[in-house]
Length: 244
Image 1: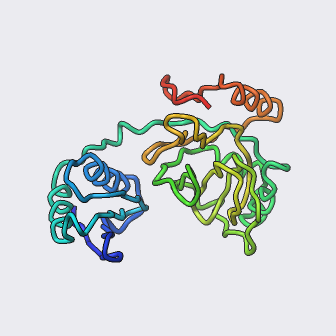
Image 2 (image 1 turned 90 degrees about the vertical axis):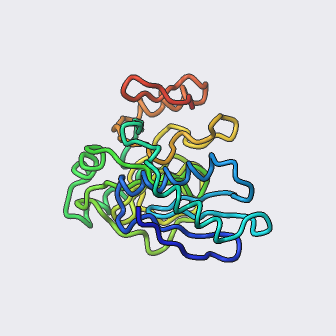
Image 3 (image 1 turned 120 degrees about the vertical axis):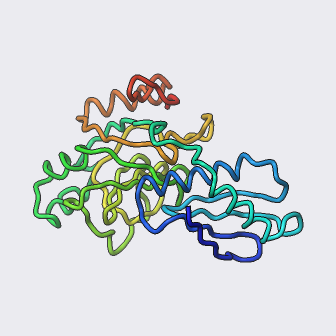
């Protein structure tokens, strides 16, 4: 692993793990982050993941920047602790179009497709969660087909409902809470991606795979009610994740 280091102020170092945006590089980022988080060396602080890098915070009164880099180089040469086979595949039921996905027709028109073709392409594959950010639990996901890639809105919306599924360029994501945003909205899930009263509070985590499952309005209402009552359990490959 050829790591590159850049200073980010006097209490953080940016570690560039690779040049590509792909699940393998993402796995290396998460593996290195796990080694930092699990170490008992005084002075290491929070780590923040990116597509192909991570920001390592440290206390310069306890540990020097040279020591931080030496430890990161050592851990970077060790075998990866995260294997691809550990990835969960989480199904996200999604109601596409209409008031739940007001930009679906624009995405279709931009790419010379019908709205149904956009839905079939978007729900036809699965996506890699690279990291969470922007707002609590927001999954930045890659792997979307270029056939439906669409630029962000020129003017972001002030308030986007929680659960909205969006597209920005070749990425797709889900808004865990109501927030401003400029991604093109094509659908909405009744699942709750962020719940501060749940442990862990986030439904998804970096390294997960996600598959969108088209549902109709009746199914949306049924799942939404189950989520409110705490009875809905997203399933994947026979393994359940935390209830919503």
